[in-house]
Image (cartoon, rainbow, N blue to C red; front, side, top):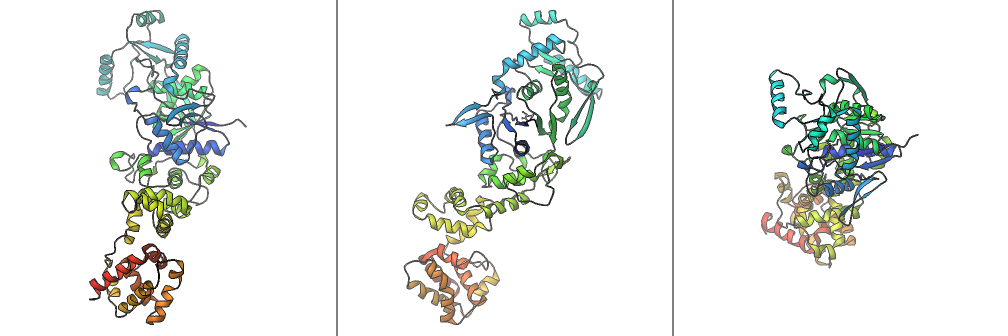
Length: 495
Ligand code: GLU
């Protein structure tokens, strides 16, 4: 079987949008599912939208997400280097190639010089708009002789090159998501292929590159679907085979609108900054617009590669549901190796001022225990501060009236006395201490079960629920527990 080659072809206009990441992911999953290649190509022919540093950002975001390309630009020691046999993979470095095909199309009579000014084009468009017509070039320069056009161009007159579409012809193609599509050339514009700045338009460059780079499947957002007829026509006049098309439904927000920056986070780097794991984000994004054959919801990248197919991509927009993302990401946090998770969490704990560099040096296993203790309950790492907060404030506040009632129960002073006494007999809280402590307090006070555990927990954290008491004691350590006991006694038990 022919080796499949798929590409992700972003324009470096800023950050990587979450919808773009999903497009990259589907390309990658299918390429890997079929044992093929995944290529990154940079489409930077629109110089007015070019953003410095955006290429680096794209590469970093993809590699963070675990979507590793086989060919294209890579970052090495902070520098961009291209690897692969089909390069260059950056369109601005391929201008000679496009020019060659532009000349061929002109020669063949499939493209023509157009000298119309912006003013004229605006006027035509406005006229069409008033008549309720689809705005379209009126073909004014189509009939210029090539000789005359070349002469005007050589005299320095500004021009573009346009595609010369035949009149009244149905252009047909198949899309794996949308099925068979047919569009009449009367409804399509004579697309500009080469702009007056010498750069090709997207439409020209994309066809040339996809062909020359041996792309077998074009997978991208559905906003490009309406451009396909022009591309198909270009393939035809260039005598090239048309690749398979797969147009993905747009990723929508909960109001079924396009996800945009105005309505919250859309950049991959926002999700990185919030402490989503790449595994979680990728797993969730795969499900926005694609569904597996069974009801499995938690996937590793390998499992996604194994299960993915275009047949199960939805026709309508996938909804980006942050709660579902949190749920999926929470699973991946729970599945994460505790040492890996601790490393990932340290920057968030530092940022929130719970720990500093010295703590990381001296008290790594204490940090690790703290992270492990709250691992269960977090859906992204920036929540960690809220969760560990209970270990840092010795001035306990009972979370509600029930907690206050339990804390002021009759047997509580005896429980706290017993705990203090036990603590006074040790240097530091270790596993041996925590293992038997509740049994020993039970023995000396005669209080057991809920009546023992609940007030102890509330005295130490203010909450009636939470992590294991033994973990809480270990993380707090002797001094903090003593301070908490004293505070509770003073504030709530009238001592
Ligand atoms: N450069 C286009 C974009 O930024 C890519 C379209 C395509 O994949 O053909 O969306």
